[in-house]
Amino acid sequence: MRAILDDVIIRRGSFQLEASGTFSEGVHLVTGPVGSGKSTLALALEGALLPVAGRIGEEGIRSRILSLPFPEYHITGDTLAGEAASWGLLPASVLKTAGLSGRGGEDVLRCSQGELKRLVLSCILAWEWDLLILDEPYSSLDCAWKESFSRRLGERREGITIIFTHEDEILPRVDELWEIQAGRLVSLGRVPEAIRRWSRPPRYIRAALDKGIIPENITPGDVRDALCRTPG
Amino acid sequence: MIAIRGVSHRILEIPDLLIPAGRVAVIGPNGGGKTTLLRLLAGIDLPVAGEILIDGLAPRSREVGWVGEQPEREIIFHRVSDEISSPLRFRNDPCPFVDERVKALTGELGIGELLGRETRDLSAGEKALVALAAALAAKPDILILDETDSNLDQESAGTVEGLIRGISCSHVLQATQRMELAARADHILFLERGRVLHSGNPTAVFAALTGTPFHPPSWGCR
Image (cartoon, rainbow over all chains, first blue to last red; front, side):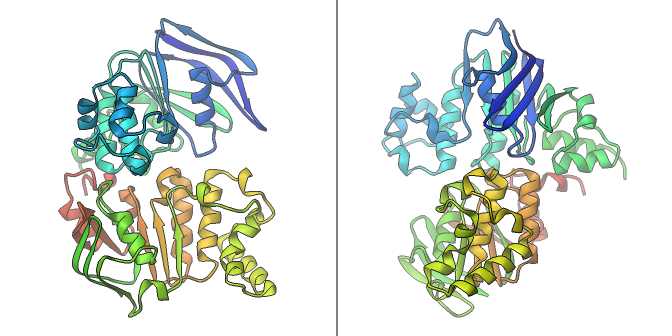
């Protein structure tokens, strides 16, 4: 199963992004500052934005979804239970996963942004997707939920998971790192070797790199283990 | 000093709390009462019971600056200069005074080059800076940022933090999910289920939160 970007050029207004590379099965993290083109690439991979040049090819991908940064864009139900049911899911189970048990009758528009995000992510992760694209899945979540969803994303063993984010404190275990640098998608390779090539790592990873320590992966736990194992 | 006594409002229950002047980080889970507290401190809502005094005066007697979680949705004017000057124009300050204040403020914040731009053409980080400038235009006694950094990257959040450090505002309260940023505040409030469970300096509060997700990742092994 693969998604292949072959000399792709994507334009949105005056902005242009160039991308080449192959996303194979596993968890991929694509980072870059706000405005660097992460959402543009996410839309193109989902098929919602057509490249002006090059080709986006696929092998073996039968199902896909793009999780949008603002959860309200996904909402079609009028209550929390109705929204869960609209995904073909049993509301009680999804609401429990999202930490919203007993609130099925509430109006979705009265929920906080964080609660809506938990609901939508729980609905998305309740299904198996060959290609799961997540655009800023951590925005609006508190630290405990960021950690909880990170754990679930890091445990995905099948399919292609591509996480686009500027999150800098709680990240999942990933297989490959990518970075958008000056309008171009750059493959940094597989973790852990890729970590040393990361030009703008989160501060807690930078702290380890500055000491010459390369953690096994990029979760805060991996970095903590690496720092605590190393004397001095 | 901010004094809160016997406050009961929606989920929030605060019997007695003193918040020192300076930069205060407000942290804790979603739904724990952070926004409810900040809205009371801003005077947007009045508590059902209890009293809040900011340096001896009620919040609605103080000048308050507010920046929310999605600054781009709070911007109402097409031009950056109109957006930043709006709090002064709304209170009918004379035009020469408004122009001078906006020029001085944007110079101070280092965003003078944005003045001629249209707000819709700004990046998310630039919109946050414009919203911050608008919040500071009327020289607030208290500045509140409600998870403004949620949709900002590390660099933009760092820029906002640097600007806040440089301003002269007695009380800055910032709700955030970035524990590294909270660790650099003068004081931290940790709220959960409507209660202030911890209030103190970063060392004391994070000592109590060791082993939870609400702990700065770089403090793991010190």
